Length: 152
Ligand code: ZN
Image (cartoon, rainbow, N blue to C red):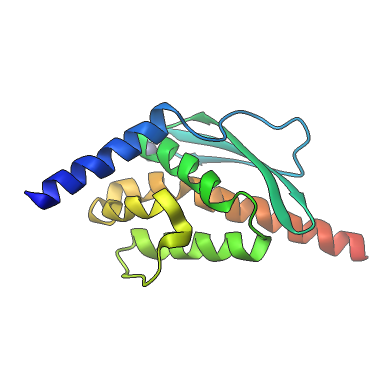
């Protein structure tokens, strides 16, 4: 019974994020951007970041996806906004382990995204949940390239 109520609460949080996604839209002056798609489900996410002083100063996403991919993108933007590149990549690692069913000791930094741990029970939905986080990793990887080029 208790578990069912908890599941309902989690479901409501996921539905709230998907129907009213946080940081949804586009950035006029993005420093990093990627487009990600998950052909298995048909999810498409465009992710834009504005990096400054090694920090994520702004983040927006757009596109169209299922409930899980949209909620996950919304939760991801909440978790990484204001974080450094290294902190954001560490969170992406944590999230990846979480949806693979690993027990993590401290989930506080993931915020609402920690709720998606239940996705581990539904392998077909794992790609939906990780799409935005993979996009984040890919977008941040382009920062490294820019940095390297600047040094040259
Ligand atoms: Zn999906």
